[in-house]
Length: 367
Image (cartoon, rainbow, N blue to C red; front, side, top):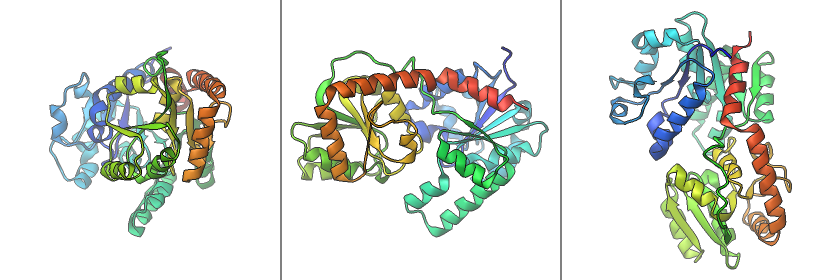
């Protein structure tokens, strides 16, 4: 099959390449670029990162469009099509990674003919802003930005039916592809390790969103259970003090490299994600790809992936519900093995990186 014309993936000022991926930056973007290049003749990343980015070492550094002069972000946003005219003019497909990046590719597309702008709508930005307690002015700004996005852009990729319905309610003629979050099943896979009994693992940012206080409280009431928390964030110190106060068997691992995370997912008994809200969680699908039984909160994005009792378990977000689900999992090891096997099969059939980009290319190239 002939490859499509070049593409550019746009990132917003709050979600730049080095900030988003931290220690996993290099591998995350090399893997994504490789996957894109199976379907597109070229891929560039556009980001608001400043000259510090030039100091990083990775194989495709010359393929990243960034704020080389260290300009004010707003000024840079307006000048992007002029500063990077040559690169923006050559690409046909502009992908905005999430709604906050949507208006930058649209702005650039006004200066060049034949560009197709597509938003990779990973979560509802308005809902997220309200739930994390942003100010009224910020939420008003987000609503205006989202309204403009829906007014101006026609192509969207969503990870769940709920977001698809939301978009169609505001823009009935939108072209939408429903594509599950992609996971590299050649990297995230079962390693057939001996699993440690009575051990639970969480992977993600240590923030209010992840509902870790209720998780730690639940573990504190389960005799013999231990919880391994992988990741970092603004709540880490508070959570460490909280777990010590409850005398809970919690091990904080901090940030880990990808291969270390995969090893941990293959070592412990259960993966748990009790978040108050999520987009479709990369950590959840990566855990499923590693063959570990999963428990996740009963929110709409998790319900798109988990069929309760078939490929995992859904739980409430309060301490008692989390505790009950953990106790049930510990008492039903045969069912847990069956759920993990079903989840692994589902991920391999529907969530692989290769299939994701094949479907993305098919969708975005249709007239």
